[in-house]
Length: 289
Image (cartoon, rainbow, N blue to C red; front, side, top):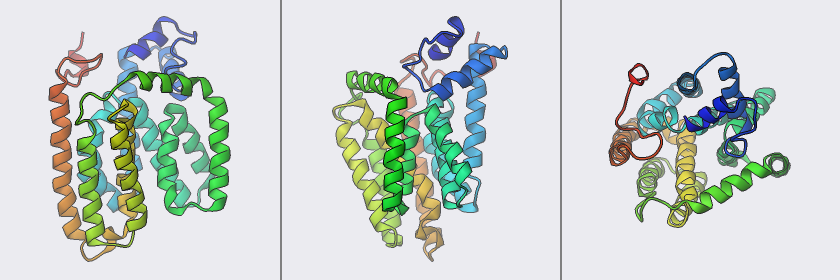
C-alpha cells in the first residue's frame, strides 16, 4: 500500500522507481489513472494474482492437484496479500515455462518479459525450471538475456542488493519451515520414484545453500521460497505422478500441505500488528475505513 500511495501522491514522477520493477509500477499507475484508489489498486492486483495462479495451474489435472494440495496452503495467501509483485511474477514465469515446454516461443518470450517486469526473481525461477532441459544453446541464450537484463535493471538491482544487505533474517530458525517442507516433498518423490533424482537433488542442494544464506541475509529466505515454488511447479511433470505409487504420493503431499498451512498460519499469528501490512488482524476490503 505504501508503494501505491507513493505513486498516487506523486503521480507521473519517478518516486519509488528504484524500489519496484517497471511492470508493477506502470500497471499500478495505469489503474490509478483510470480512477482507482490506492486500496482499489491493491485489491485489483490481488484479484489479478488469483486469476493468474488459477490459470497457471489449470493446464493439466496434475497441475490442479498440486495447486490444491501444495500451492494453495503454502503460497496462495502470501501471493494475494503481501507478496503481490512476486505473486504476479511467479505465475507468469510458470506460464512461460509451460509455453517453453509446448514450443510456443512467442508466448514464452512475452510471458518471460512480463514476469521479469513485475519482479526480477521471476527470471531466477524460470532458470531453475528450465534447468531440467538446459543445453549449451540455452546457456548461451540465458547468458545473453541475463546480460541485457543487468544493463536495463542495473540501478534497481543495486537498490535491492543494498536493501537486502541491511536486512537480517528474523531469527536463527528462519528458513527452517521451507527447508523441512522441501525435504519432505523431495524424500517422498525420490523414494517413490527415482527417475528425476538428479534434477530434484540439484534443487534440494540449492534449498540447503539458501537456508545457510538465510542465517546472514533475508535474501536467503526469499530464495528458499523461490526454490520451493520451483519444486512445486515441477511436481506435475515428474515421474512419480505417473507411477504406480501416485496415490501414496498424493496422500503424503496432502499432509505436507497441511503442515505448510499450519506453518504459514503460525507466521501470521506471530506477526500480529507487525510491519506495514500485517496479515493479522485480518480485515475484509469493505471493513477498512
